[in-house]
Length: 222
Image (tube, rainbow, N blue to C red):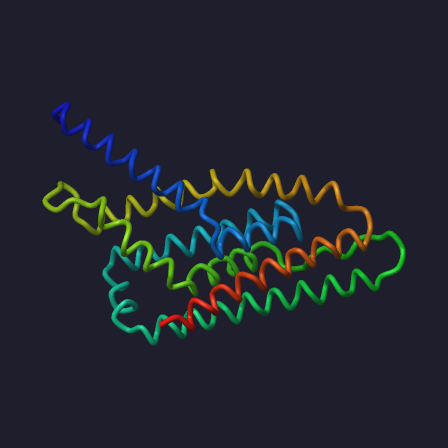
């Protein structure tokens, strides 16, 4: 490969990676839900949820590469229905956190609240569902990825989209893990009593409720 083409490829990839990092850092439903989980239930559960979110994002990439994503963009009603389900689910999680916080505030003594029960594949499934029920994800990929694909390249546009999307998904943990660890460090400083744990649950519930409210407002926009 000529040196000039290598330089151009390097610039394009660098620009793409910088753009990905900026978009990942931007606060959104996935990041807020992961942060809320880290504050409420710790780094292990937050990391598991993150794995599900990344998997859901990667599934959207496959749909985009396969051309299935065009169905969603050409049927706004379907996308609205998907987003309504996602908003309802996040609202359900917020309600559950509010209930746990209320139970903690009413609990006597210094014992902390019981740990959350959802683990393993259930948390991964939750992350996949949350990611897949956010049509803004597919709209983002439809608007962002085509800018970095090239017609007439040795790889087909579908393969280019798949590779670029996979790179995006691979970058997510590098951004999310420091945030998860920071939230877990803060959480560890406040643990030791039901009241402190309840406060963290309440913060988590408020964050989830805010995400649901923001998504609901986006649905009401023309």
